[in-house]
Amino acid sequence: MDRRIAHLDMDAFFASVELLRYPELRGQPVVVGGRHDWAPTIDAQGRRHFARLRDYVGRGVVTTSTYEARALGVFSAMGMMKAARLAPDAILLPADFDAYRHCSRLFKQAVAAIAPRIEDRGVDEIYIDLTDLPGDSLTLAQTIKQAVRDATGLSCSIGITPNKLLSKLASEFDKPDGISIIAADEVLDRIAPIAVGKVNGIGPKATARLQGLGIATLGDLRRADDAPLQAQFGTTFASWLHDVARGIDDRPVVTERNPKSTSRETTFERDLHPRLDRAELSAVFTTLCERVAADLVRKRLAARTIGIKLRFDDFRTVTRDLSLDAPTQDARRIRRAAGECLRRIALSHRLRLLGVRASALSDVDATLDTSGGRQLDLLGFGETDAAPSAIGLSPGSARSGPAPG
Ligand code: DCP
Ligand code: MG
Image 1 (spheres, protein in one colour):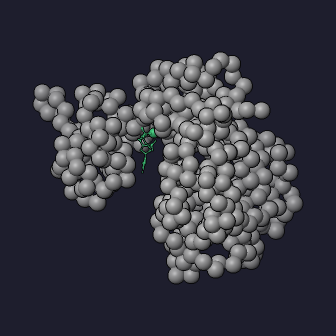
Image 2 (cartoon, helix red, strand yellow):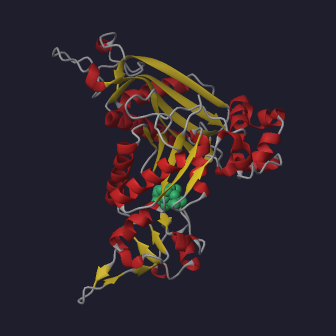
Image 3 (cartoon, helix red, strand yellow):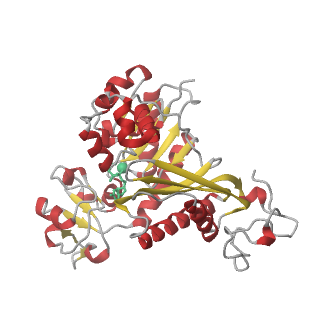
């Protein structure tokens, strides 16, 4: 059956939240970045004074900017000094993550009241499965946008298409404050002109390699032969590219309530050597495991299977996973299982991507032992007596855990 999936992305999110508290800045180029040294000051007459980008000295980067600043060429991740050359008069504000998180919760709650099947993709974006809701897509999009505006005072942009890949692209078509709807029969025409680098998952390196094959847009990609793509990227990535070019994406909208898995991955700034960059790799690996553990705790889930994903510099992708004897949320335990997976892969090339996944998830609330005994090793107790060669399972906990729900 045809699905109807929305992607909603807040417009200039951090900057727009700042404009709620400093409405006098509306219409001006404003840049958000860094810490509190350049918070506005208030003079004896009660007037606010803002720092200007021209006064900035340092190595910080722009977190986000208003559309007025973007018109001057100032975008996310640009060095602040460079931004200051382009827009010296732009107002500079420090980031206030608590405020952004607060608005993030408000807009998600407002959407959930209308369309409850939501996949949370971070602070300013969500996917929404509208398939089972009545009404036409345009009306639904307008209703959702109004609810977000009522709850937060902020605007957002929405794309509605048959899948997540397309909706993510579509929500950008008409930004800010836009609605883009792509029906199944117009998908190929609508995506053909899009630059390949706009697709989530096609980074600068892959974009450069595609360029080398004469492929700049999704239309070019669709017309390309499979063989050179496979030679360049390996079969997994090539077959994904093949689907992307045709707007094919079967990934479900994963709601917080019943995810199949939760994962974190990172693509390195430069490809890392398994031996020479070992320390850096190991630190990233540990951080990914800690993030996965934190996600599990937040979602009140425990995982029984831990997996890793590697992508080599030749774009080959390899995965391995390992089942634990008992569900866990513990970062060290996850790290050890992930380490065990890593040892089962021949590290023949530099790495460009590393990911950690927790699956076979069970609901912590449902599996908590109420009989007094501790079945779930949620806190990683029993760690100290684990044998050094073990994969994070203390001998005592083996087979005593409940089956995953
Ligand atoms: N962000 C960040 N670092 C980046 C990019 C973004 O910290 N390199 C933060 C600031 C943004 C927020 O994440 O406000 C959302 O990112 P978006 O890419 O959605 O950017 P905006 O919401 O600011 O703008 P847009 O209107 O293009 O969505
Ligand atoms: Mg945004």
